[in-house]
Length: 195
Length: 195
Image (cartoon, rainbow over all chains, first blue to last red; front, side):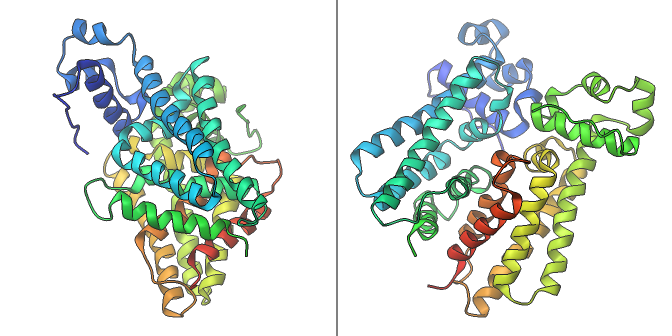
């Protein structure tokens, strides 16, 4: 995986995009500030003008994407009444987000244990909010008679199926995010549907 | 997560168990040799008598568990003819292994990008072998008319559902590994079965 530069972006956003790729490729702790300096091609002073520490970068990357997922899920809970349709909308949004921001989501799913408090709790709270939106959708589906009774193992099984995409999806190559989303959504409904 | 000591084990195995817990909890690069020394309560000389480097530990932990999974899967391919039964046997073995060796499997799934060559390729080859056993089972099931035609996205979806267990299973608390395995196996068969 080569590091992609984003010369068209404002400097701060560009630094975040490059840092996410470095963290995703080598792990947060394996990347030093001097590696980041080399990758962004900025001097120490210029880099520190935009960010204060490596953990700030990890925090901004993790929070941004899980907050985005949690907010979009909260909105779908209100907007989409039918539980089966809502599963598909939640799933498609997640697959598209992983496909378009794979490095960021990798950091979000794999590196957050390196955050310190109170930031760790804040980011974990967004994770919980996101998971609750899926849980509520499964409960709604069970209440409507569409889905089997809610159970925790099935919730985690469905989420794991989607989340694992950060490891195997290959952006720019077939199958596209749309094809993956359609297939995985169909699998999720097979798991959930009342017999 | 507290670090569990294993005073009854031979020293080398005990060091591996404790190192796996430290790596799982904080990430491979965040753990220094001095942290490991503190955790195993051995002097530098005694520790280096058993291991040569931190990467040796990562290599031994990752290789041991993915090799074990690959070997057991290869055996099930030979022993169990019925594809549905084989899915259940593969799934149960994996869930039990995650439940009984959660720290080691966390390291195995999450930290291997920190291995250097040729060790990285060796460990990834075991991952591929393990995945091929699942793929062959799905192809056998399709050939037998039990499963839908094989497709790559479904393979990754099924594996993701199982692998994610390393993050959410809580050993010693309900539901037990047996209950989880039974439920997840049933979900896998729902995903795979011909309509």
